[in-house]
Length: 99
Image 1: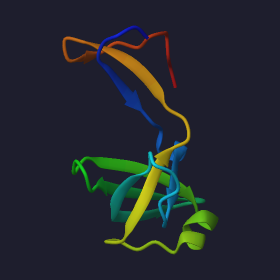
Image 2 (image 1 turned 120 degrees about the horizontal axis):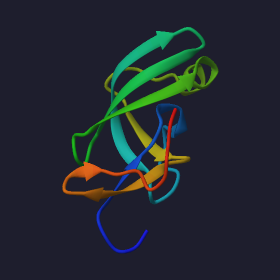
Image 3 (image 1 turned 90 degrees about the vertical axis):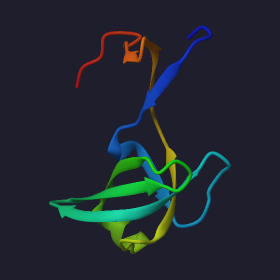
């Protein structure tokens, strides 16, 4: 993408969550909500730096391994993401994209 404004999106299952910082690009966040759903656990996280909310999804095994509770601090880093250029505050996908 040439010079210009962009926005990045990460799917909830593409966020890596750790108890300790694991790299300079990790973002510190607070666990705000825990919702076990079937084989997965959905989390709502709040970034400490911006206050923005993030949605994350972990396997039950990974959730048990981390032993997370609401109010605890974690470190979040994307494993994969999509970047799109922005135009007049509207997101325009760089290529056709569907889920």
